[in-house]
Amino acid sequence: MEPEKRFLSFDIEHLRQSKEGIWFAVDLMMLLLLGINLTLIIIDSIYRLDFIESFIASEVSLLEPPLTWLKMHFFVIDAVFVSIFLSEFCIRWLVAVRHATYHRWFYYPFIHWYDLVGCIPLTGARMLRFLRVFSIIYRLHKYRIIDIRQSSVYQFLAFYYDVLLEELSDRVIIKVLSGIQRDIEHDNTLNHRIINELVTPRLERLSASGALITSSIAQAMHSEADHPFSVQLRKSVVSAMRNNEDLVRLKSVPFVGDQLVRELETAVAQIVIDTIAGLIGELPDLMKAESLRESLRTGEAAWTDLDQEILDLIHEILEFAKSQVARQQWKARLEH
Image (cartoon, rainbow, N blue to C red; front, side, top):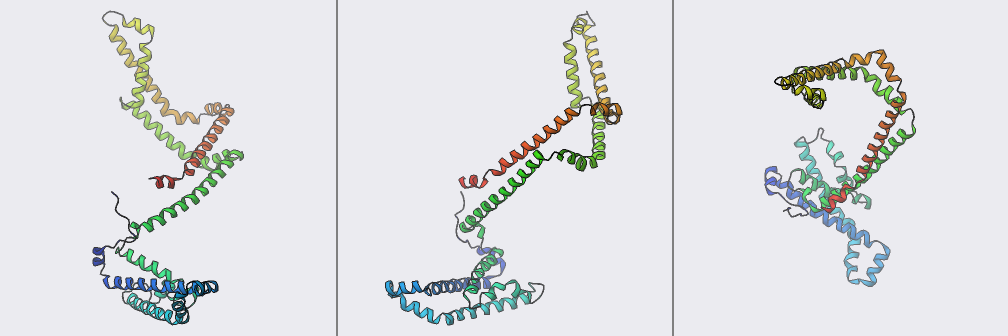
């Protein structure tokens, strides 16, 4: 059962551990004062609009006296709030200097610039006082006194923030993949560039790695009777020999037929395994032989077809990747 979501949940235990009880009380008081101050700012700003003032005077005359009084004394009232905010700011600055919270004593006002700018008695600057609300909530979250991640508001905003990022990133990724597809389709030099710029510089290391792999496989086939390659080859050889009519007739020889066939199967299977293991071990040297290299060059059409198949495969992989990216994962999360 999921825990009940609340706007903010307090953790008394972490409050005790943080030893921030006094500052917690200060933060709550500042939040209350900020709420009152911002409410008064909004009410005064709305009432100063001419059509709003006329509407209240004619339709809601009961509200006109207090609103007019607020309008006339607003700067004095706001100055009281500003003095409280500045006092709290200076106290926190002194505490930060005492505890060396920042590298230099004068860093605090620059880091908390919005607290100072918000105290300027201008409408635009006053709106920065909203940032004080968020800074106080973040500070309480940092000390784990509250956990905003468990709040319904945070989860709502975080979900739609993820939706926005997912939609934007999906569009960018699809555009990039489409550009790669166009390059593959229309750039005839792409395969040559891949070979010349990517494969050729690494050819020696690839050859050395291939030689090491083939050598280890060959040694394992020689020394390990239960190697998967050896086991499969042995099964194939024995199966082919048992279907051979001459060996079937040989098996019918009285007394020694079965023994001869078993010995022959074992010997032939081992010969085949040793031969193939030897070929695998010599494969790197065979690839260097001029005759083999020449025979590979004669099949240019086949290599061209192979190149095209590889490019088509890359194109299909990119198309599949685009379809996966285009899936709106946030809808699935919303349904659940």
